[in-house]
Length: 286
Image (tube, rainbow, N blue to C red; front, side):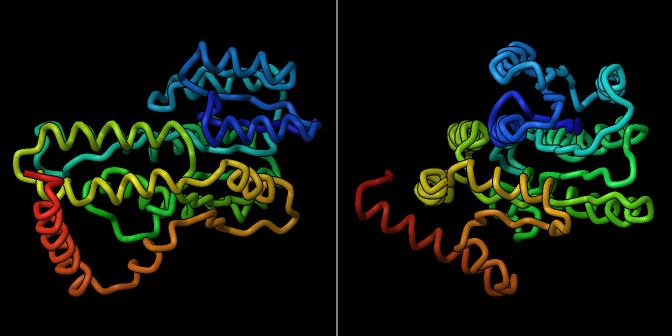
């Protein structure tokens, strides 16, 4: 029997990975999440090989307690999948609580991952694989009003490289997943954040009016979770996995990413200004 610990497991991409790993058999899976009721219902649906573990990854004590629960079942972990995370759209400067929003996102998306790996480290053995979820936002230039999320994922990129180079001396693999846009609850978080941003802004109404349709298109073109699950399963089962899995990254963001800032920055301003004039002519905005 092999053992896996997967965070964010009550739903979304992580839940789909739990289900597929459970379907393949031969695993005891510790499904970890903060949403206790949803997690227990999910684990019950999956069966006895999926063990629910309530954990608040923003708390060191909670992560240590989760590791202690794992130790009641096994003396080692074969795979850790750090998939838990949150998202929002917001302004880095206009919101009075911008620093608090950033602190919370860093605390969960980056430090939460570090806490989980730190707490589980005594259970790591030769051959253990640590799979950390970054994002396409971890390698692309940050887009306006998505910088909070991008900052956390750029941090994950550096953390992942450092951890990989530490654990290679112990014959353990550290693998990074960079998903594009997928159909999950995180889209709802982004959309809600954008709506609140638009309602509250004093200075960015024209900009957000133009960017809103672009965001809507991006959300509507989100990919099926099966592609992400396939990538994670390859990271788990492949004898020689990639160091980095880019899965369904957004093609047009990849296209503009190499453009130098001295061109791209005024390009943003021109496109938004021109777009707002067109929307006014069409009566889309006042």
